[in-house]
Length: 175
Image 1: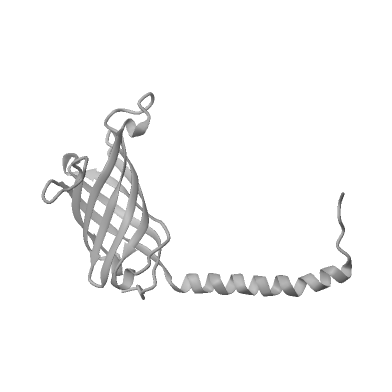
Image 2: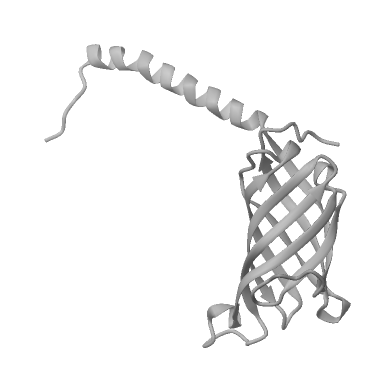
């Protein structure tokens, strides 16, 4: 049965919708004030030094041109799947992986859970960064962002771009 709202009921509901809409806009504005676009370059190399990865894959590198993210990076793979987990259709050299990326910048440290795919056959990769913790200006981080790029140094290095939005309780601003 279709229920029709009488005009009197509609008039009573509209102010409530206005209050709810204003609250939603206020929350969005508050959320936006703690969110900033991030963009920069990440260059890294595979390393075995201080590598505690259970699968033996770690990298070290730097973020440049990323304002508050500029600093040193370390990555530790926690798991990998040959053929990107799809042996029937992908080459064994292509990998899907999960790990932890840590960016140590001048004004704090950002730790992300990293989920990626490496196309080693063609020399490309892409990663989804999901912030999990932070210190300094990166306190209480949220909002996923991306890293994508190419293999370098005969497959021992990576050159990439970091981009997206990062939200924190600290004032990351634009440096």
